[in-house]
Each structure stands twice: as C-alpha cells, then as structure tokens.
Image (cartoon, rainbow, N blue to C red; front, side):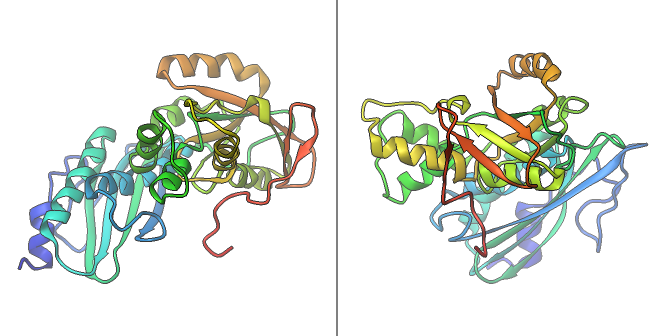
Length: 322
C-alpha cells in the first residue's frame, strides 16, 4: 500500500508554473502580480453534509475546487492558486485517481495551480484554500448595496437542490430535469468570468451557496438595508409534462432556499442595467433582475407575489448549526 507522501507524489504533484516554489517543501512560495491584492477563501466539504458518500469521485473532485473558486468569483477576483487537504478512512487508489482527475480538470479549466496540501486518516473530509488576485479597491464586497439598487442573479438557482431531492428519492423529476438538476448539483460552474466583468458595475455581490434568500440577506445586513424580491421576476425553471403543483411548490422552495447553486447574486444601480445586459450576451449567461434593495431593517428580505403582497417562507436557506 502506498504511503502518504507516495500518494501525494503520484496523484497530486503537478507542475506549478505560477508559483516560485510549489509542493514539496514546508511552504509554497507565491509572488502576487505587481499592485494586486490577494483574495483568500477556505471551504470544507464533509461526506454526508456537503455531498453524498457515493458521489462519483470525478464529480466530487471538480466540485470540491469549484465551490471555492465560486467565492473568488463573488469577489471579482482572478483565481491563481489553491491548496488541498483531505482526510479519508482508508487508502483507495482507484477513488483517489478519479478524484484527482476531476480536481485537476477544474484547476485547468480555470487556470489555477495546486501549490500544497495535506492528507490524513479520518472520516472523508476535504478542505481547500483558494487564492486569487484583484485590483486594489475593486473587489466586489457584500457591504456596498444601496436602497434603489437592482438585485440580480445569474443562471437558474434551485436546480442543484432539486437534483439532490431527486437523488434522495424525495421526488421523481420528469425529463429533462434529472440531467439538468443533477448536473448542476455535481458539477457547478463557478462564475469567474461574470465576477471579473462586474468589477466597476456591481455595488455588492455574493455567491449563492446557502440559499438565495439567505445569501441575499447577508448583502442586506452588511449593507445596512433591506431587500424586496418579486416572484414574477425569478428565473424560469425548466418544465416537463408532469410539472404538477407538488413539483412547482418544491421547485420554488429550492429556488429561494435550496442553496448549493454557486450562482452569483449581485446588486447594481439601475443605470447599469444596459451594461449588465451586454455582459449576459457576451458570456451567454442569463442574468435576471429579481427585485431591488430598499430602505428598511438591515438584513430583512421580503418576497412579494404578483399582486404585491408579501409571501412568508419558513425556510430561508441552509445553516449548519440552525
């Protein structure tokens, strides 16, 4: 059986042309681009909490990195480097090989080098730290929204949560939902290009990981204002022949509170709507204006039905300790 360092060398030691010194020493040595600030984020993925234990390891490798890069996207940062630490109950080289394949496929797609990490024995748990670069003063933050700013979201939040419900047998999705929803769950696409394009346009941004209402609430709280979301302006979810009332209700719950989407929710002054439309066309990515920020209690998010009446939703999003 291969030991710890042999496993690292075999599956995770790759060239790191952007690093002064990559894996193999006590620390990596990195040289940020002149005049740039570093954006740093860390996320853990725990089996049974963030992914199903029988998830395809290639897809898990991709997702483990993608969810961290999504945080950089939300800050308008260009990804540069990542580290990977993992615990596993036993050495399964076939599983590790497939995981590494997915992880490095994502790294290659978004131009990042893996510059270090660690392994240990324990319950399956993955921890990634990602570093990116941003121009000083240009990072997209959560605290810049103002009353009157429009609220936007990319893609179609809710697909990933529906995919999880389908895999757990809570609902049987009609075609073509299974492929779309499970694909969104297992292989999210971090919106790096969108984050970069929003520099100088968006007033605040966050990635949708815990649920649209919950994450929008973080923007509202940090910005000291409230948010109004209009149901009629939410992204359309695909419909099948069996699109019944039960599925319609679940889809709305997943869209507003499901999480695990890794789309970007952002705010921008109304005059920026034309620029946002051009970005959507250039990236071939749907961007939806779903409401506006308002003068109200900090962090309060209200959803309005087509008649302008507030709608109560018990579940706002995911909370590990809630």
